[in-house]
Image (cartoon, rainbow, N blue to C red):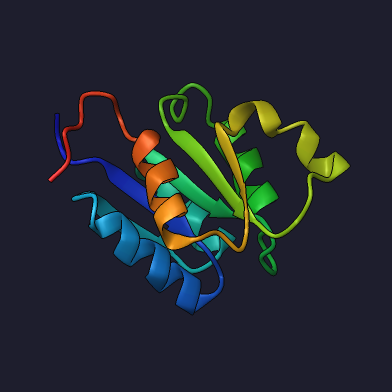
Length: 128
């Protein structure tokens, strides 16, 4: 198994840096997107193993990113999706819930985040 590629999307630079440093402990390749537009641009060219996605972002939201992911079926079907958000599930989001494997409410403790992300990596990845 090759090293898993993880796309982390958040508009808050501090959280993006924190989540990225945690994922690097798992020996994964980290791709950062500072917002939804950057995430869609990356997803148009790559298929990461895991998408870690904030929902509440200006201009292009996480919901917009999820709509893009759904529109790219089956190309992005193998990608796992972990939503990190301080928001509850809105009516707008319910239609996209089947595409999300895990939903985590912020704030999340770093070790809990790391455990959840590790559980979502491909089964045949043994880690660093």
